[in-house]
Image 1 (cartoon, helix red, strand yellow):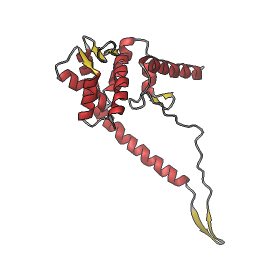
Image 2 (cartoon, one colour; image 1 turned 90 degrees about the vertical axis):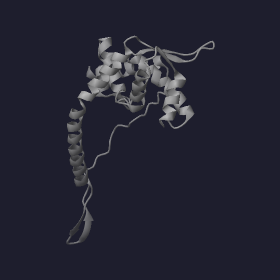
Image 3 (cartoon, helix red, strand yellow; image 1 turned 60 degrees about the vertical axis):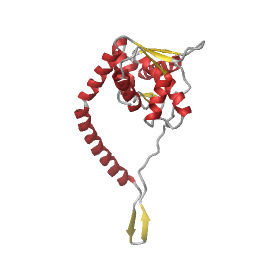
Image 4 (spheres, one colour; image 1 turned 90 degrees about the horizontal axis):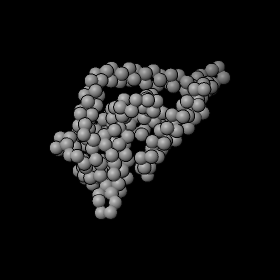
Length: 208
């Protein structure tokens, strides 16, 4: 979820809040899909699927093989775990249903009838904000430069005095929060959805 810009540590990002607090399911799915379409391993696979004939269903091995051919993932085991999470996220975005294989049937994703139009719409929407993002990135660069200058000014300085050299005190403060990484690789769809709901409830409690 961090890779999609939905959470940071144990906090919802602004995008995460927009998704979690959206009451309209169609709008929520659309916001989720836009986040997916900004993450290359998911985006490129979805585009590949719709260009490959837009099948009604896709086996999980097809996803893992695509990632392997395009150097996504560090190992076959890594791709196995990531593929399950990927199909769960596709379902949360309203693209279809993730079916775990049983009784000889393969694990697969069954696509909704309108999934092609949903993917294309999300891609077009993201393409429209590229120029805006370019401006934002320039502003972020300026902000980072200002931050660096601020940090440099707060560092202890060695100055010369009549009695020799001394170090000026630093005005630096230490952070009072820690960042916690959450690994979703072993989580099923219900756990992921419940986790997002939990973060939403935490946000509501903090606002009271």
